[in-house]
Image (cartoon, rainbow, N blue to C red; front, side, top):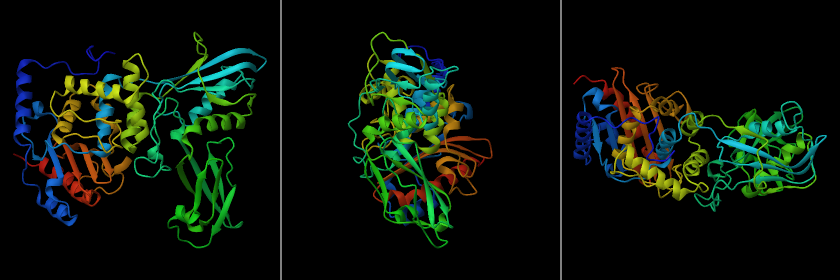
Length: 496
């Protein structure tokens, strides 16, 4: 859908009287974008964290001023300062995607048969074409390969004499090294986007203690071809769990072998440990081959990158969950690589070429201009917030959340946000004041901590809150942001 086409999910341009009210609201926000007195408890907690008030940007304002009749912010402090919002930037990506693609948008993964098929034998190649599906996890890869093998309702292929080709051409190949961002290449959050993103390029090891045998059984998913993993590790005595990952002394450096020099603490019970695979470039090939072989399939050639012959029609397509479900996973659990997949999908769907970050940045800038206005344009990088370059102003983000609140996709965006003290990244830590009353996206990087979303008050008032701290001690300032949410719940319930 071109950016200048009518959007089925967008709010029509308001009539002149409402436009005047919107202009009044923006003028009020701009007039208070400097510094106001912060709540005393916030000031105290900032001082305790050794974070100056100049490192904080805040905007608290009614979600729908046209409905409440209250245009002035409850609180505005350095709201026009461009700041790094960390994972809160996912709000921009997911809201833009909900409007530009629609909540029911789905990704397809076509499968092609390039050869002749008879009696369960494919004389030729099987091609799996990635189209950016952010949720092609292990279970769905199994369903895809099961359909290739199934006699009833599938292709009935048991043997492939040629190769399994993996087509990743829908996205411009990322040159990102998983270690580039913070030197933690084995952290799943550092996985890079991929047109054929399988299981987030991660493996999951599950440890189950067996005290009688003095070992902990180790299972490993997905099955990875040509990777050696021990069936068990020694079990250490004691009831304490502690740092079980450190106690195992795992060595992931060899893509062909995972080893453990330590032991698994007996007091830990069953644990699952997700780890990014040491050689992400070969992950898809190893995962597809390992699962194909485990399912009893035979392959004469190998799994490699490639494309289907020109003009070949797909034998079937695996369809993803809808975008509304994907957005919930992104925001509830702050999934970086899924956010980047969605960001790249914007340009994949709106251009003739492959998805790439620069084209997606342009699309989001144009969308922001059309929906939010020229002011406070966000500085986008990869759309996930896992970036040192991304910037946004608190007042710009607040205006976007106000626009979203009266849009057709408000229910989907609101439902994707963690609920304070209930689920997602906010499941723990909320006070009694804010528990259940706030839908917030949080973000944390070195030198940055942030939150943004909606606060619902017992009086029925609905508020937008944006708070960002950029400072070397930003992590220690998180209690100050939590106190700000509590203040918003209380202050928003006061009668004028």
